[in-house]
Image (cartoon, rainbow, N blue to C red; front, side, top):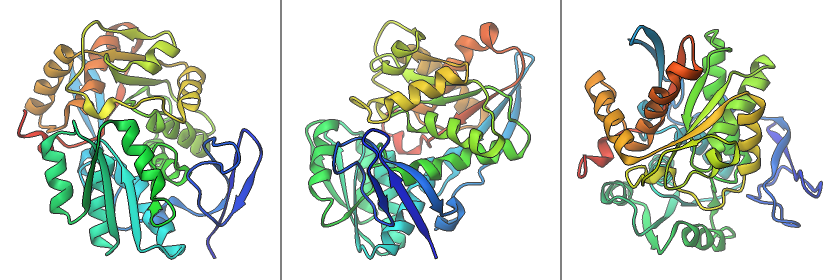
Length: 332
């Protein structure tokens, strides 16, 4: 018997064996407080268990976690799969998601595989390649003016369809924690980790995953684009001058779990660095030439490594490469 309890950290409301993407009383994000639910139970297409490969760069060891090898080409599959599992348990035949691309592609892919009706709402400025993939997977693509407008529209559909709401969803966080489980199980508990931060959900999930698995966490360094450096500014990190239009997947207005992401960086002894398009382009080219065909937002993590490796990282480091670059072939 699968069971769970969602609890609001703000007002204390508890919800058992139901799903809400936010607290119906105060609107705060909910946490998964009690569960009989292993993230592996939600495995749909063999997502996760991605390679952790080693390279020697400038005399230092760098380990790359290849999340772009998940079925849809991004780490979002870990969270999507467990939500498909919950949606099926609750009797839904339809899912809806708002996304700038990767979460939408993931939901479209898993919706197609599990025969769920799927609605994906994206900002109009989403790269054409991502929109073509979503349509090709049979999902209904709806375009909104902004990222915020897309989320607001998706929320109005939450009664009809299971709203995955990756920025809010506590089950999504549970799925993403498996990245930390996999790294920790290989003995890399104390190795600094650099990962992209958009909503901050991945940063929080890595932190929580290490605490759950090993009761301690490595230093977490968040990589952002200089056009939207909310986390870097909050923790006193570094923000490069200039824009980061290439890192479209790292843009999110007022993330609901931003306080949790800030706390994760600070408690881990880490930092956050926001890089511009010039740094991202250079890092992207180097990664492709190393054999890692990633998207610009993933390259931001490597760009950040190049900025901090000599100053703040003495030994090896782990870089999470979150998404494939093949969906960007029209601009690469």
